[in-house]
Length: 406
Figure 1 (tube, helix red, strand yellow):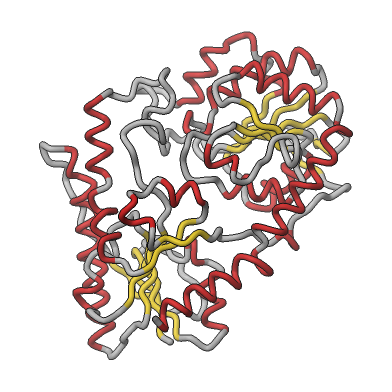
Figure 2: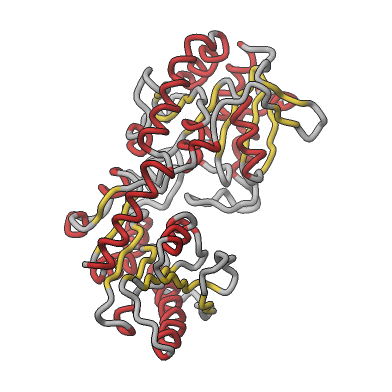
């Protein structure tokens, strides 16, 4: 069959699925932004979308941007059609607008979407943390307008895929019946505990499994993934455990999924200023964004791994931590509780209770043997639910092929 992937950053979520389908004899083609890296053996048509200037009504700016991207992707699609390409299935992402006009090129093609998220004006990524000034009712309307291209794309799709039940649940009921749940998966064979693991800090010190290492991952060091809660917990942790070392993984670039930091500052600066001298920065190591092997090395030496999140798409890093057999302490929020069960494969704490978070970290460091069964179960659960080779990829292949044949 002929399968077309459409994603501005291809291969993105299709990094395993696309080559697996090609290996099964299907013709796989991609449409992507000009900066996408692509995959060996997968022909890729590149587009360049026009830059859209924000209008007076900022509520429509994102929709304009997505329409421009969809129009640019359709230009590439027409060229493929002129060359005789007729996809049995077009597989794209709900969030970028690139599939909006695919059926105007190939009216008979089935379309599948990766249904990653549908925004809400309160209680999810916006309006969850009452301490952040996010704009009130005006922001709620802005967020509602943000979904315009998502709704248009979903209205045209035949099939859709969400990686978790939570992510499926945030879509309007009229769309949920076409969304199946299947996680992307991680290669559990390549992950797992390593007794000889080490992680080198920039000052030359090397951490090993003998050290009391607390790890924390947040791509942009922002409140969406709880950087403020974690930093508020650390003074109590460091006071109780004088040998603890904290490794904070993530960029301090000013980018974010959630609300912007005050002008001229990053969220890291804002919350470091808040905790001030109470935090011993000689034992808190901001290591920035890491290459994957360095990231795994950090998880391998961790005695307590912290994962916090608003109700937002579940980070792959949590599944990685489960597969690595980490002692996980996580927020009791909807995306997390699908993966982490209290005192079975991790410890759950209220997202906002930094005191309870500190106590859980201290307890994990003080009694690592008590966390050992949770570590083992976390890895077992990762293998049973999220293993790429035995669980996730076979199901994704079956789904894609069945959709293409539909």
